[in-house]
Length: 232
Image 1 (tube, helix red, strand yellow):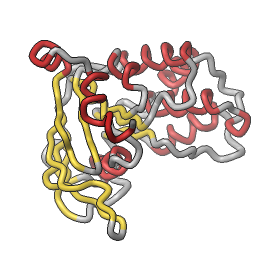
Image 2 (image 1 turned 90 degrees about the vertical axis):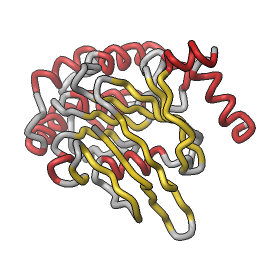
Image 3 (image 1 turned 180 degrees about the vertical axis):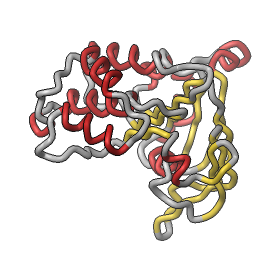
Image 4 (image 1 turned 45 degrees about the horizontal axis):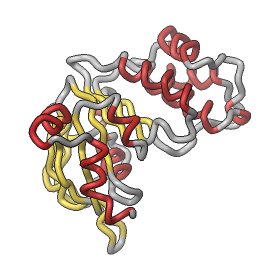
């Protein structure tokens, strides 16, 4: 569904994404893993059509990323993007005007599941509540691809359970979910495949069940093997 070949993005002399080639398939929940600065967010923004590659190709269902793909790919960034005047309800109506596949009924149900109400003012939200609101807005779209960049940032343990339940409800055979997070153990409870990126380069894409059976290691242990001497 999502495919890139020799995908590269440079900022000055820095290669944020360096020659990545991989294919991500529907029916799976991918965990995109790597330390800060490994290229996860840059790759996601190119897949979402928000950033153009320096070189290489990235496509959705065989066509270059563009206007059509943006209508089928729901991306949640790490940056805050609410206007100060917004409430949770008006943020939903804003999305409804912008995205044809946005469902207010689904959005209201997601708000309920996350203990949020439409009258909440976005400027008064805690970081955790704002994160839950962004996730509700993203998942209320009937997209084919959902990409959530650090969905568990600023989220306490109980709220993570709410978010995990909402995310897994979208794990369907025809859909692709891609999540990045530093909470590797949390991701292991959600993902069935892992994308390991280091210094902008793809290390490997692994089926987690196969990795446990053939290598005898968990996703967290494999993360330590790849990045331990980098972060430690």
